[in-house]
Image 1 (cartoon, helix red, strand yellow):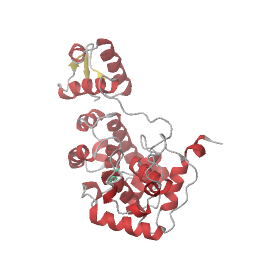
Image 2: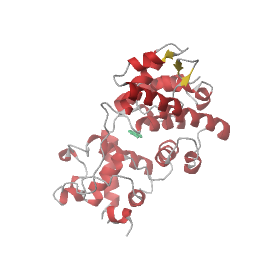
Image 3: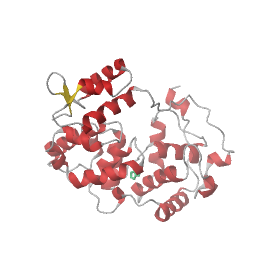
Image 4: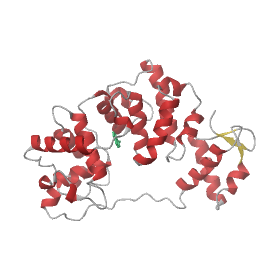
Length: 304
Ligand code: ADE
């Protein structure tokens, strides 16, 4: 038996799918947050930028950065015309800054391969540098209305509870979860359905303290009907931060970002972190990732 099968047995679809669609789509139209990338008329580039930013960062931190990014670079060609370091600078403190380089590379590929227009086809999207399966599906659905499953961590948790009767999904995405999300898509308004499930996970069916009393589909929830059993799957890894290389890299990158465009002395970077060995290792990895570059013997700057 494969690992995926063991972790996620085939789901029994809810009985009244039409009713489920109606209730959740109704809840979404009454309760969804008014987020700028969801507004009618937002271009596919705006959706791509939002999805890359939102993958590992909360909405409240993404919103101001997304707005200024779209003001400065309203099309992929605008971003592609700038050096990659400008994308890293504008990324600010969103975290996981390799995403800025990936967006810059994707913008260049959109210009070269697609005449500057973000493609609609999920395979063409997934072929762009740094665009993975999730982002490709999200852009195809939210920007172009494609009927494809969009499965992020909120969707995974909602479907684990609502359909599988489990508190949490398995640690890593399985094919069974994507198949389940596909089987649940309504014929019409599939993209709105996906964002509605996402929104339920963000606002009500949260990871730690779900607000079940406010849930529009409480009476259809398998986890609820089983008495909300606790998660009993394989261990899930949390994201450590304090003292990690990720924190150290973030600190060093901030010093470079806030320093002169000509570069910052390595000694200043080393002084910005208490552990010299770790600082040196992290500087090496930032150079290797292309997030910073050497500008002379002892200077480091954003990539020009
Ligand atoms: N709306 C569309 N995509 C979203 C996402 N990934 N997170 C939050 N809201 C969204």
